[in-house]
Amino acid sequence: MKFTVLTTDEEALREAGHRLAQIRLGRNITQAELSSRAGVSKRSLERLESGFGGLRLDVFFRVCGALGLTQGFETLLPEQHLSPQDILAAHTTPKRARGNKAKVKSKWGIEQ
Image 1: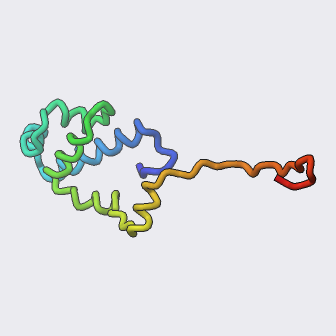
Image 2: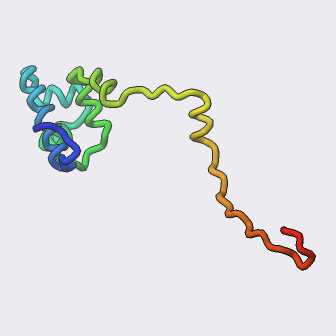
Image 3: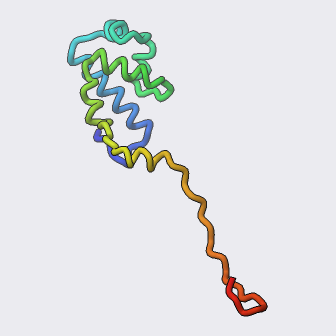
């Protein structure tokens, strides 16, 4: 399965877990061995591989690190290079929009 915009969260989690399990099996690593290397419980690894969505993100990162997959994060989340002007613009508070006052003629004929 390919990840697309139309992929549901549940499908994506199941597919990611399945792919991690396939990588682990392809390297002939047991769940117990990988969970020990990653510093996570065997149950957390089982839940990750089954696509369970209630796990913390650090479990995913630890397992990927133990499998040597962290170089892919650079492609997934490329570093953004912002200029100082961009940073400043992002942190300025927006000005409050004010409408133009309607010009009213005074009783002496002067616009105010």
